[in-house]
Length: 479
Image (cartoon, rainbow, N blue to C red):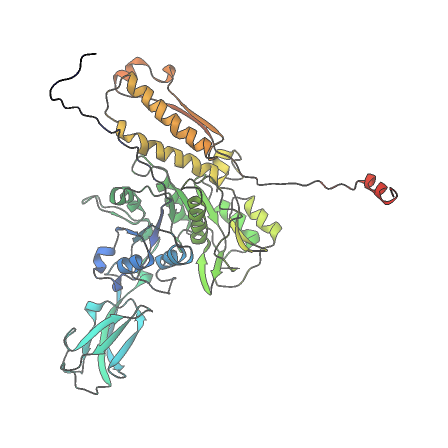
């Protein structure tokens, strides 16, 4: 071979990495104490991605009044109780949802008065003596304490006389009761195209590049209309993706009546995990949907983000079960199994504490096939479909030639074989069939692939058959 003599330049290209999502992203919709944040109006009907408890408080505020501010329950369950992130939130409580409190005498102790109400909007506070209205920042300061209540502190050297012990204080506060099911459901403005409520699930991927995997509305999902819309939205997010609704059944219904309530109110989707009743943990009441979702996320995390394992029989942050009014309820093990056999997930107490309990989607017992009836099998199908879209989007608009056809098959099978090798699938393959791809279709730029996968079911029933074996009696006389 002749040696090279001179100067030359060469170029190589690194193959573009496939896009993958390795986390489970819950999407919560509800209400938050946005009066505590710097821009309350900017926290209304927007997708907020929070990466920590402090991040959540900075973006949406925090309150212990979870009945009024439902998103705070979810934030505490994921960020504090289970140390999980990120989580997507949408708050539908508007800064215009307020109730006004006329100026009234307020007692100041050592120059400080705490307004004994949550949700107070700073810019609506008035402080005066009946003839003079004082100025915020000059005569007094406004800060929120750890309980989310506004503290008024008189500024030394300001216009308020030293030693003042009483002033007239007025304000407007958020009114969470103004939010109803219609607000949670939301819609799309025909004129502006702006989305609100559950419609904002369409914005999650657009805003964050994450696919929302779980949809929740604690405090609202037991409303059959809200539950139905959650199921409707999860099937076709952005016209591409699929999610899974984690819903609450009505926790005011007695446990023996819950299966009938579930069926009568249409909580029967294969893309739905129904949970019941409510639960307590460290003195706080939680919706079971929130805690089951946290268990799902934890279980997925232990499997590299792959939802192959059921949340059932996994530890759950529960120390008691309650009805909606807080009355304790002790569901016997056999009754918990009856709930399970009607497509309802609950929790049971075992020797090491409470575990989530139930493998069936809402479609059970109407549908009994693993693909629709088992929660992890169903979620695996959604996971595979979503990730096929993410992985192969980069190949859209490439020249449709033999190399492209084969590269999709080869790359897809490598990925699926990896899932099989990790134990996430029992088997799987991708095929390109001539019968699915007639020439006129290929000429119009459409390719169709067949994907065959078998996610593992779970060992739901383990039986031991114990027999008295009289032959061992011989040991008594063997000596």
